[in-house]
Length: 372
Image 1 (cartoon, rainbow, N blue to C red):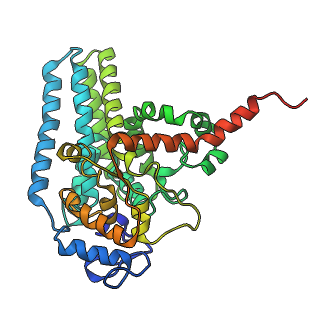
Image 2: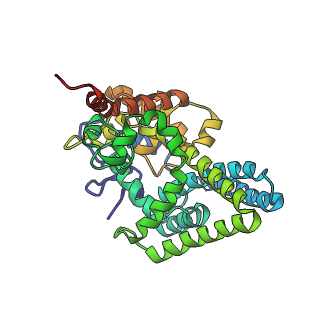
Image 3: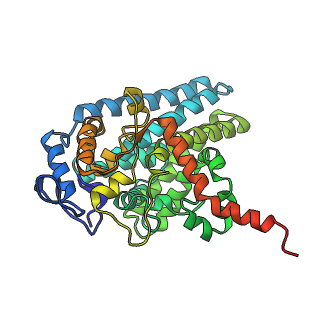
């Protein structure tokens, strides 16, 4: 089965098409014939933006790899000292950069072939940061096919937070308890996201979608064994726990700060609501303005609209694709949303507060004295 991460144009299993052949998911008549997306994909292909960037990725992999090695060299050099908390924070950021590389590998931005991409993804994800490549690949594929769809996108499932007022009205248990104040709790909850990635990865080993559970599990538990052994052999127990908590907290907050601005607070769909491919991806995504530092910190995902339209596009080309995509959206009258990083966080938090309103209203009614 072809997945959304395997083609230049992000297609769901029921959709097909190649960017260079004038076919694409979605309907509507676009500029130059064919679907709206086909017209855009031709412009992007003609600009050479789907070409591989082996030099860029060789440099990026080398630099992040050196940063990873340097962090663990510093860890063993510092030894039993509270300066290890600085090392923990640094490694939390490095783990975030490794996660971004695993993301690009999964989208086949680095290698053209499936085997090389999967091998690289498991080495970086399972071995490097303790996150299952197979679990994340399955989850992210479904997200790309139907972003911000309440029933189809796992990233807006009401597991802990609620993402719409309809979800809030149906919420029970933990989502209902947290939903009242979820906007205020969002960033504190991100400190647990690193732990959630590890736990979810292990739980997924028994799920039917996992293609190579023995290999995935061996790599995951190998990472955890080496990681915990290093902490508790080098550091006293209390210091080791402090390192673990800070490291995973920084990792989680960093990842959440990268991914939250992408879709949270953008239009959501449910039921049979499903626009054509071009509009489905553009309307639900948000770009974050910034320069080279923003590109590095967010791994190119600040060009979320372009990434969702062309997930195979190497991340250094996303900046160049932006004016093409934006201009095309202007031609078709499709809203193209772009803002600053701080504004994107504010929009996401505002959306969380609005989504939780029914829970707060219900709590207020329950607390009011009954009619006499």
